[in-house]
Image (tube, rainbow, N blue to C red; front, top):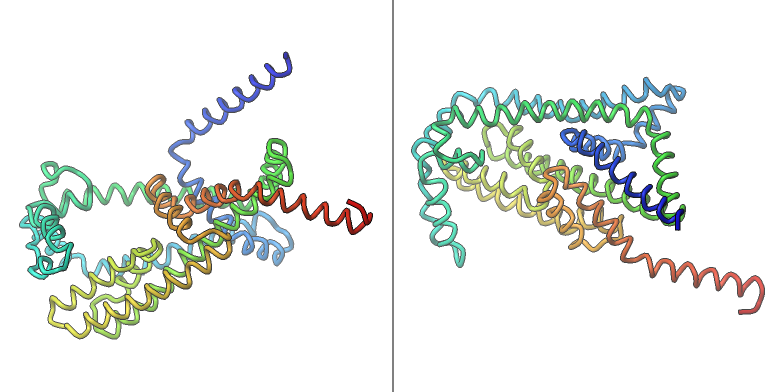
Length: 365
């Protein structure tokens, strides 16, 4: 009885310690999750660098961290350079649209079934003064008097995002530096509470889910941005690099790319380039259909042996629950669930296999 009480008290104490640590570090949990996801996705790269540098851990960790940071920063700097050229014209357009509202195109009302609802939403959201500011900032209209206030809101968010990015890169360096020791410690803890075989099963599926989701979302999204970006360039869309970068960023989220390429098509149509607008809309739909119905299901679903519908639940549910990091945390959670769901069948299959080997070895049941 005393040992049971000690076990219960020990479990409660452990949970309290974990909860206290999570509360203290709550503002840094998102950068920590991002760093963990990046470390899992690029771990092989780090090991190759470490092997090439004669197992010089600090140098390999710094170099791998620098490479990952560069992959994110170079496209961002290129996009900012292109955007800076459009800032004066864009500021005037945004200011006028925000102050006066954007009238709804007449074609919206002619869309079958959903036309009336879309037109009503547009009239109540974008057609009213300062509606644009409210839509993109989430701040009440009365508190945003113009585009300047909107830029202030987003400036603060960008600064906050830069701080998070800095902490993510810092955490990533230490994950590389101490990753082998940390992995051994986590494995020991998992084996203690779940058993070695069961822990290996869960850990393997979570890592596989993160890697396959990175490949299926990020790499496919970048591919969509490049392919649709070629159409931007061929049709004469201004600043095709900016539009391609925006398309790639939105394409990371399944079915997010249409927000970019349909906006680009609308821009061309508004400026009289109807053929170019149709070309972008058709080509973008073809690329999106191939990527989201053939490539992504193969990269994510087949690698994790999860139904693609469950993958979608993980992606969209993760974004709803955790924000952008939920794109990868959600499928990992679904991988844990599907592993738990299949565990009785896996155990039964293991028992049957053990029985079969016994029969082959002894010749008796």
